View 1 (cartoon, one colour):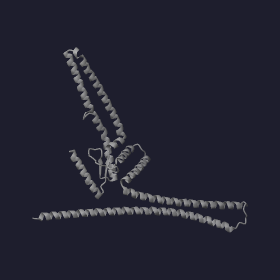
View 2 (cartoon, rainbow, N blue to C red; view 1 turned 135 degrees about the horizontal axis):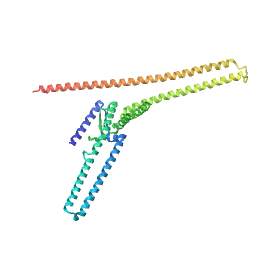
View 3 (spheres, one colour; view 1 turned 60 degrees about the vertical axis):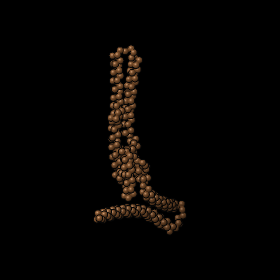
View 4 (cartoon, rainbow, N blue to C red; view 1 turned 90 degrees about the vertical axis):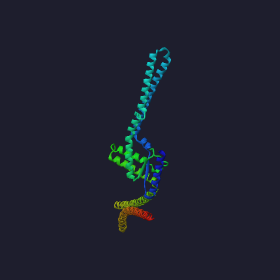
Length: 343
C-alpha cells in the first residue's frame, strides 16, 4: 500500500511539474517539525510534558524495584513458609505485577496519557500552522503546499520552495498583535515585508534581476540628486561669502578704514553680482526639484507600461492556450466521428 502511495505522489508531482511549465503553477512546502521547534508555546508545553513522562518513568522504576524485592524475599523465605503463606505472597506479587502493567499501559500505551497529552499539545499549534500556511499561500499565490515531515515521501525538496520561516513569522505576528502598539506592529510588518522580499529574490531569479536593475537606477538617481544638492550648497556658500565680504567692505568704508573715493560703479557691480547669484541659486534649486519630479514620473510611467505589457502578454498567452485547447477538442471530436463512421 505504501509503495502505491509513493508512486501516486511521484506521479502527482510530475504532473504538477508539467503543468507548472505551462501555466506557472507555484509549489511550496513546510517542515512541521522545524516549525514546532520554533514556536515558544509548543516548546514550553513539550518540556512540561517531558517532565511528566520522566516522573512517570521514575514511579514505574520504584514500583518495579519493590516488586523485585518481594520476589527475592519470597524466594529466600519459601522453605520457611507454609503453603498458605506462599500462595498469599504469590497472589500479592501477581496483583502488583498486574497493577504495574496497567500503570505502564495507562501512561505510555497507544491510548495512554503521554500520547493523549501530546495530541492535545500539538493540535492547537498545528491549527495555527495550517492557518498561517493558508495565509501565506493566499498572499504569495501558491497553488500547492506540502508537509515535508508527513507520511508522504518527498524524494527531493529544493530549499527555495521551503516556506517554513514565512509560516513561523506569520504565527509570531499573530501572537504579538495583542501585545504590541501600532507603531511596533508597523515596524514589525516593515521588517517582515523586507524579509519576504529577500525570500522572493532567492526564489525567483528573474524577479531578483529586475529588482536589481530598479535598485541600481534608484541609486544612480539618488547619487545625481545628491551631487546637485552639494553643488547648490557650494554655490550658496560662495554667495554667502561674497555677500559677507561686501558687507565688510561697506562697514569699513563707513568707518573710514578704506578710501572714500572707491568708485560707485564697483559697488553697484558687486550688488548686481550678489542679486544674480541669488537668482542663480534659486533657479538651480528649482531645476533640481523639477528634474527629480520628472525622473519619478518617468519611472512610474515605465513601471506602468511594463505591467501593461506583462498583462497583455499573459492575456494573449491565455487566449492562445484556450484556442489551442478548443482546436484540440474539435480535432478529437472529428477523429472520434470518423472512427465511428468507419465500417
